[in-house]
Image (cartoon, one colour):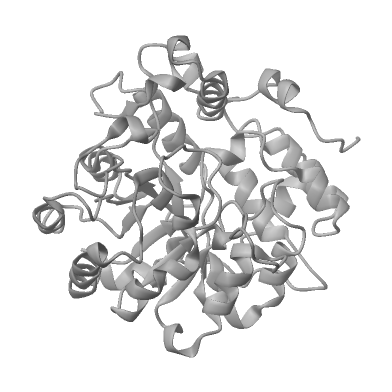
Length: 394
């Protein structure tokens, strides 16, 4: 078997969305089972999984017309939507894509041992600095109620995060309201550039105070953003802009460990990731700043990032496992790349290639679990993410 990377076209045309267990032999099945040694499935939560759709199932999801209508002259955006539809298997269910996405995700997590959960992310609209909602300046919207509703259907398998914009004139009322919902949100989700949020703006201070008072964490994207367009400046995604939130006492999860890009004009080759690591080493934020490792395996990440995260065992208690679903099914992770870098071995690569079309969530978990740099893999603490959210569960 050769491990040449598939190009985008062959990936798009390749087999996906296969149902049932992958066809593994006895030795391969044993290696998969062994990956759970030392882990407690009841403590494992995937902290970063997206909800998606086109708004065809009463979900309230909204997608920018440029992703669906040639009249808006954005073929790249349309291609990205098609890619995500194939990744979530919704292209097989025209007219019911919102529910098809959920059903596929539900079937994937049900293949995991009992106790494993996924946290579903809502996503608010873009707001201008004057407090006006401006959907056309963003890319998509996933309502809080849709995320809560799905989590409530399967509390044994799902939790959820709300998304509330700090420039929304009604943010305080909305935050108070959702804190009373059952099940309640486990955190607040932001993507600054794509939502129009400047995290170090004085306008966010009251929001941070409210989060700290509610003991509600903030999961926010940091680093360059390639998947969702937004009209705000790219450097609003810089991790250093989160200092105000941290100094206000908010527990902050930096999505993807800020593993892509860097501020223009700076010479640090590690870019935003280096900025994030410097912040992680700041003792005053030791109990407040965390990172999720989702997307750190994507092909556009620097080769130094995974070895750095693996070798920093002292930081493993502050790293949280996340898949960034549906990206593991969207051709952006290369088994060949990790094999060539020596972070996995050939037998593991063979198993991963077989599993991917059947269960991209299991594919991602096994790849992360098997990563090994100079004899060091991710500690069980990285996967036992329930510990982070346990103070906030209701």
